[in-house]
Image (tube, rainbow, N blue to C red; front, side, top):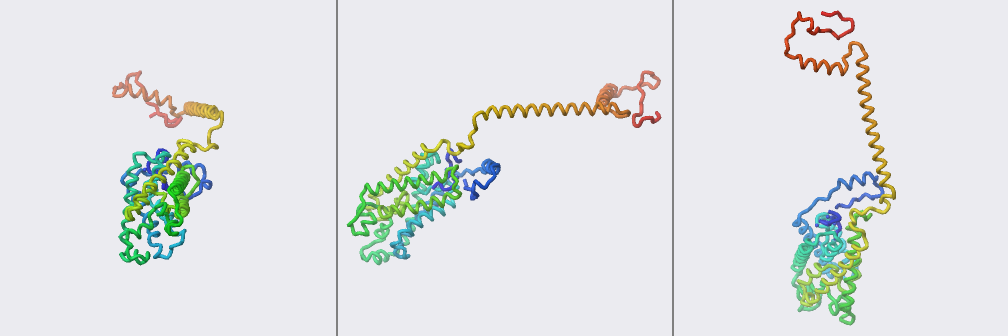
Length: 393
């Protein structure tokens, strides 16, 4: 769900930037941090890059968790006592997304939904080259979870609950699939007296998915002040599924719809196309709106209050000139101080100054290894400069 740091987005190198990141999202409110600390964190907190295999594995795990918990609650609703409660199953889907996105969102971006991946690609959050591999991973994870749930159904349970001796495991599992018309949940409950048409099912799936993907793109933006995006994403998904459940059984996710259709009666596969077209269309709308409504690139765009004011460039140039002049003045002061020390050393009797040391050194280098005649009046004499007034030896 892009609930962590995006995996390989151009604007948040997640969020496959995210993120994830989605990056991991700091739990400390931004307004409580010192501006210098915030800048240091932004410069030092570098999200690790994960391989495509690792990201696909995270998507398999996340989609598996989503279908296992959400569809599992719906499948055994009549057994676990939550049948007729319109909150438990949607809440189960939301909590599943929250947990999975918290666990692996920093690796893959936490999509777990082909529609979310498409919206992220349009908005520039992930690479287009990763889109199809992500879809395949999500389908594999969802199908694996549905297979486990299907084989958990006792052979006598369908006929016992449905009061129909001819009921099969596929018939029982079909209650979790998405459908419209005579296969919408309301039509099943009313015995076919009331049903939702194809257009109504298409509309609710498009709008709900667009809202869902829009929320994801918004809360995972680097400029967002949301401290924990997976919670906002999970709660939004739960509410939207509760809205769409009476009409289509609440898909918003082609991988989830495909996973249940595989193990259901034939009508589920026949109507599956709508639950690919509608969510992908809604995600594309959300991605395009986000792309047009937000500045690009979103990750590095400055807030209005941080943009430089007019004349700031000339002020910066003046400051640089002042700093350069100060450095030159400091160098001149250092040279003057050195010359003053040398003059003081030369003025004190018996003190070897820096200039005298240089002359003596040059004289010693030219006279080294040259024998001197003691009787030669031109030969240099050795004087003791240790203390003033010390007699010569």
